[in-house]
Length: 303
Length: 257
Ligand SMILES: Cc1cc2nc3c(=O)[nH]c(=O)nc-3n(C[C@H](O)[C@H](O)[C@H](O)COP(=O)(O)OP(=O)(O)OC[C@H]3O[C@@H](n4cnc5c(N)ncnc54)[C@H](O)[C@@H]3O)c2cc1C
Ligand SMILES: Cc1cc2nc3c(=O)[nH]c(=O)nc-3n(C[C@H](O)[C@H](O)[C@H](O)COP(=O)(O)O)c2cc1C
Ligand code: FES
Image (cartoon, rainbow over all chains, first blue to last red; front, side):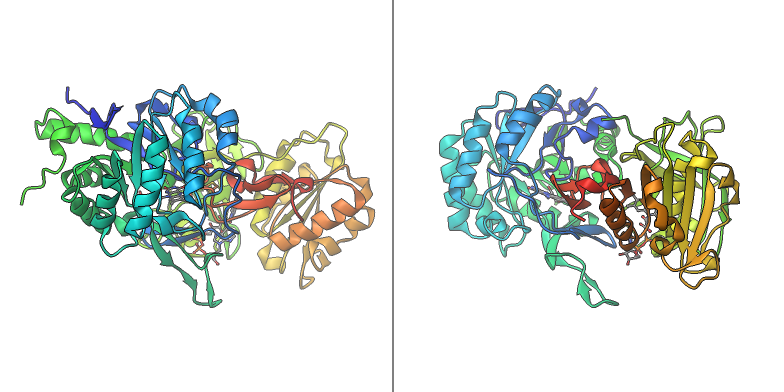
C-alpha cells in the first residue's frame, strides 16, 4: 500500500487532490455523484462579507482547450454561509477550506474573523487574485505592498492554516510569493485564472459581459506548471499547484515541479469524477514506480 | 439533491427528422433513474479539437423497459453538428439527469403546451407524461416554415396538435402568440412553454396579463450543468439563479420578465 498522505502546515490531507474554489460550489453538488470524503480537500466557492450578485450574463465563453469565466464572485455572503450552508456540510469527511475574498483589507479581515470561529474549517485560502471583480480581487495580488498588507492583517486575526492564492497576471510571481511568505502565509496556492478575452467575429461583440475574463483549463497548464516550479524554488512554505489539471499525469507533473498538493478546477465541468480518478491514478503511478509515499514526488524533477 | 450519474450510452438510432433536427436514441447499460419532462442531460462531444465543454439537451423520451432515452438535436453550431453525425454503436458520455422538471398538471386541468424550435422535445415529453385526457391538452408548435417542423403525428393521441409558421406554409401564419388559440387563453389553467427567449417572453406576457399559471423552460450557456460554476444565471425575483439547478423550468412569477 502506498502512502498518499500529505501535510500543508497543520493540515493533514489523506491525499494531495483537492477541488479548486469556484469549480465545486459548496461541495453539496458533488455529493450527488459521489462521497466527497474521498477527496484530499475541498476549496469552497469564493466568499465575501456581503451578498454579491456577480457579473451580468454571459459569464462564460468556451475556448479550444479551456474556458473564460466572468462569474465575479457571486455568493450570498459569509453570514449566510455560516447559518445555512456550513451546518449541512461541516461533517463531510474531508477538510473544507473557505476561499476568502474582499474589496478592502477590512473586508478580508471581517470574513476571516468569522471563519476563524468555525470548528470544522481548518484553513482559509486568501484569494488576492480574482480577475473578475473591479475593486479588490486581483489588485491585491499584483503588487508586493498590497499583497503583503492584506496577508499581514489577515494573519493577525487568524490562527489556523493560511493559504494565499496567487495571481498569474504578474511579471514575476516569485516576488509576490516571497512577499506573502514574509508576512506569515503558511502556504501559497497558484494559479488563479489568466486574464483573457473572446470575441464573436460575426457579431463583432465581446463574448463576455465584462469583455475580459479568467482563462482556465488545459490551455493554461504549461504556464501554471512553470510558475509552480519557480515559486517552489523561491519559498520554503508548501506550494499548492493548479491550472488545467485534467488527469493523474498532469497532477504528477505539478508535484514533480514542486507542488505538495494540487487542486482540480475546470476539469470537474467536463466530468465531476475526474478528481477521484486522479487520486486513483496517482496511486497506480506510485505502485508502478515503486514509490512508497506521494510526498517523495514533491520537487523531484530530475535535471 | 438527487442522485446524478456520468455514463456511457450506446447510440441505437440516429435519424434525421428534417434537414436540421435529428432524433438520437441512446441505450443505457443499467436501469435508468426516473427522468421527468423538462429535465436535461449534458453531452460530451467526442473527437473534436475545438470543443471543450459538454452540450445540454432536453430529454425527449424515456423507455424504462428498454432502458433507452431519446434526444432531439438541432444543428446550431459545431457541437450539435458533431453529435448528429453519431453512428449506431458509437458511445456518448452523458451527465444526467439534470435540472428541475415541469410541475405536473392536476387531473382536471386544461393545459396548453407551446413548443418552438428545439423546444418541442420537452413539450412532447410532458404531453405524454401529463396523465390528462386528450381533450384537455392542446399542443401548439411554432416554426419558421413547414420544413422546419418535425412530424409529431404520433402525439395526436396525447393532445390536439396545432401549428404556426412564419410564412404560413403550415397551420396559422405568424408566431405562436398570433395563433387563434390565444383568443380564449382563459380556457386554460396552465400554460407550459419551451422555445426561443423571445417566444417565451411573448407567451409569458399574455399569461401574466390574463393571470394564467405559466411555466417556461429557459436555455443558457452552461459550463458544468450541475450547479458548481455559477455561469448559467438568470436574474430572478430571488436574485441570480442557476438555470441548470434552479431551472431550466421556472414559473414566470419568479422571473423578471
Ligand atoms: C437546458 C437546455 C436544454 C436544451 N435542450 C435542447 C434540445 O432538446 N434540443 C436542441 O437541439 N437544443 C437544446 N438546447 C440547446 C443546445 O444546448 C445548443 O444548441 C447547443 O449547446 C449548441 O452547441 P453547438 O456546439 O452546436 O453550438 P456552438 O458552436 O457552441 O455555438 C453556435 C451558436 O449557438 C449559440 N448557442 C450555444 N449554446 C447555446 C444554448 N445553450 N442555447 C442557445 N444558443 C446557444 C452560440 O451562442 C452560437 O451563436 C438546450 C439548451 C439548454 C440550456
Ligand atoms: C467558473 C470559475 C469560477 C472560479 N471562482 C473562483 C473563486 O471564487 N475563487 C478563486 O480563488 N478561484 C476561482 N476560480 C479559479 C480556480 O479556482 C482555479 O484557480 C483556476 O480555474 C485554474 O485551475 P483549472 O484550470 O484547473 O480550472 C474559478 C474558476 C472558474 C473556472
Ligand atoms: S452551468 Fe454551472 S452552475 Fe449552471
